[in-house]
Image (tube, rainbow, N blue to C red; front, side, top):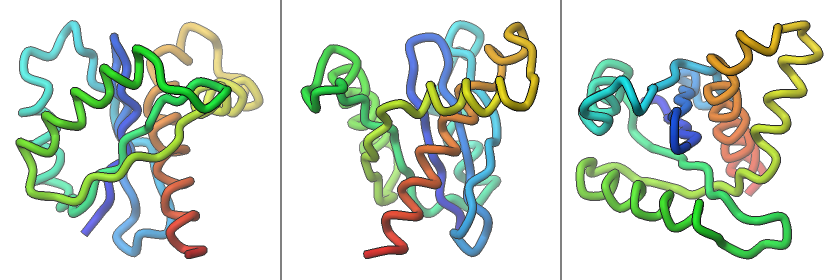
Length: 138
């Protein structure tokens, strides 16, 4: 079974998947919230087709460790996931994941127009990889 990483945003939701051994995370897709009528159904399709057994959602803490409006929206999204899927769902601190994704894309000379389309799935992969690394150490 694979693990799914989610970078939840107002406009786009980045999705990443682990390899079958749960060692590495790879960016998978971006769900455009404005163009996707049923986000939960789209996620359900990915879960079924990719044999996902666990979900990791980026937890948007402020830099000082407090939780803001973004965390409230993410908590509501996580509740929806819990109601829809009988899978373990974990929260992973996502501070600087988007910054890290932009840095990786910049170092790879990806033009800023193209970055918008992929930054969220790269951030999801960074969130998922951080979770897998942390779990591997414990």
